[in-house]
Structure formats: C-alpha cells, structure tokens
Length: 503
Image (cartoon, rainbow, N blue to C red; front, side, top):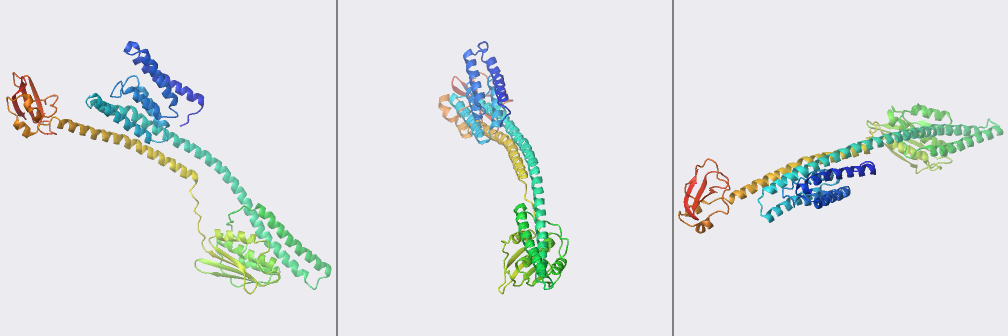
C-alpha cells in the first residue's frame, strides 16, 4: 500500500531498521555471549530486509525465520522476535494476495518438524514452534491484512465521494444542455407546424381569383419564405438537438381535436374521424406529436391533399393513424425525415411503436400504437455504488479469512497434538498377552522383544512405594488411552524380579 511521500517512506524504513537492530545489539554483543561479528551480520541482514520489504514483503519474513531457526528450534530468539512480529505485520499490510503467505507458514511448520526429527529431539520444541508461529507471525499478519482492507475501504470511499462530486457537476451540466435541447426540440415541433400552416394559408391566397397579380405574387413569396424558414429552422434545431435526447413529458397545451381545428382553419383539408379521451403524461404528449407531425408533413409535401386523422382505443392502448391522400408532392418527406426520426424516439420512450410509409394507391400513412400507461424506466445502479459494494465484499471476505485461518490453525494444532499424544502413548503400551509371557527371573535381553519401545517417563501418582532392593522399576500402560491401571516391572542386575498390575 502506498504511504505518502518518498521522504516519509525513507524515514519510516530508517526508524524501523533502528528499532529492529536494538535487540540484536543487546543480545548478541560480546558481553552477552555473542560477538561483534554476529552484531554486524544481524544489523546488516535486518537493513537489507527493511530495504526490500516494500517490493517483496515475504522475503524479509523468510530471512528472519531462517536466522532464528538455527538458534532455537522453538523459533523464539530474543534477537529476532521483534523482527518476526514487524515483518509479519508488514507482509499482511503490503501483500495483495494471501496465498504466498499461507505457503510460507506451512513451509516453516514443515521445516521445523524436519529439523526436530533430524536432531533427534522430542516433539515439544516443534509444538512450541507452532505456537510461536501463530502468535508472533500469523497474528500480526492477520492484523496487517485487516488494516490493509480497512484502508482500502476508506480510500475507496473518499475516491467514490470525489468521483460522485465530479459526476454531480457533470450531470448538472448535462441536464442544462438536455433542457436546452428539449426547448430546441419543442421550438422545432411547434414553430415548424405553425410555419407549415402559414405556408398553407399563403398557398390558398396565391390561387385566390379575387386577388390581383401583385397580391398573388406576394402570397407566393410569403409561401416560399415560410418554407425556407422552416428548412433553416430545422437546420438550426438539428445542431442544437442533443443526440438521443429524452422526449419532454409535459402535456400539450391543446387537444388533438383543437390541433385539427386549427389546421383546418388554416386551409388544410383535414378530417378527424373519431375523438377519444386522450391519456395523460408521456403517452398524451406522444399522441399529440404524432398528429402534429402528420399534419405538418401533409402540408409541406402533399399540398392540397385530403388528410384523415383516426383515433382508436382499447383498454390498454391507443392507436392513431394520419393518412394524407395523393397530392403534388405526395410521398416520404424530401428533407430526409429528421422529424420522423425524432418522432420515432418519442414514441419509443412512451413504450409504443411507430410505422410510416407510402400507400399503394398513393398518399402517405403515419401510424402509432401507444400504451395508455407508459413503462416506468428503471435507472441502472450507479457505478460508484457497485464499486463500493465490491469493496465491502472484499473487506468482509478478508474478515472471514482473518477468523477462519486462526481457527483452522488451532484446530489443526489440536488434531496434531492429539495424534502425537496417542502415538506417544501407544509406544508405552504393553499388550496383555506379552505381559502374561513375562516370567520372574528372566534376563532383560530375553524379554526385550515383548516390551514396548519406551516406558512411561514418570509413574502415575498414588501407586505406592516400589519394592525394596530393586535397581530399577519400569511402568507400562495396560491400555492406549487410560492412564491407569499400569504394569510395573522391577529389575535387579538386569533380571526381572517383580511384575504387577497396579490399579
């Protein structure tokens, strides 16, 4: 884990080296049975371990264990015990994964058992090594793992807070741009429709026989100017409109019937075949926009054609169909259909479907099927929440590991201790048949094959005094698990002089 500035890291490493060198100086100097060579070697080794502990966290721990085992099979040396604790903590604090540490702990236990067997000592020092391994290395390592995960969670929280603050500002900017784009879209929809109706009125005046040539020419100019203004408005609004902008959800200011009446008053030959109660919300807005776009396209691209607006409803949906008959410009919009693209997006956001195209006998049809209740959009979970949840799961997993690893080690140690105890007891177990074959007066060499490898180190308490005049008495178990009763065999000059089963 990173730790502030390089100067502070160097100061921390130097302080750690000095602290770990103090026990070596105190316990390895010539006045305490050591030598200055041991002091120099120990201080140098510790300095190298501190220097590489950031890049290879497990290496200093392995080197310190290797320096401690030759001095004591129990892994407890006054010179390096503090170093074991410190490097165990730093290994847990700085290492990303726990697998390498677990392999090292297992290797230390295996090497300690091997050295115990090679030196011919009892298993007592090895159990002491396992205890020292658990307390001086594994426990600090677990503390380091916990501190690492806690720091990671805190750092993730601050990073997420900073990111959320930046995202909040970006969202505010996007919302402002989106609102401007929505306003631009509404300007295009409403002004484009009004300009198309103005062009229709001007077209009616252009062919009115009651007007003179000058007035008819002026009406034609007005019609062409309205059409040109509509095209320029589309170009400007197309620049301002945000790609994939969300359709506005505010209800229209007028009903479909009022929209049709206004278009009819402007000179458009339009008929509303049926009127139904218009649904509220986004569905009503989309319904109004479909009719408005159909009338606008009919006025621009099929002037003089009859237009029919039909509405049909069921319990769950509303269907609107705008059909324009053949006219001088009947067919798909010549401008590329940008209005239909935006209309399709609006209908899709309302949960409906849009279809449009030329009719076989001429003319153009625009059909939309809209649900009475649009689906409620479910926003995706923010990235920050997912990352925070992932960091929490990592901390919980490490906490679980911090609990089950010591429990597993203690359970393994208990099972191993019980197994060794049973094995040791079995080595002092004298079978009843072998005991029955022993005869008083036999030499030890004659009965050695019937006796176990080892006798009990100390006789159980409460057995009473041994027979007088004997050189040695040995005690053997009558069962593997029970401490009593026991067999007692006493010898004089290498011969069996007494045998008894003591309760």
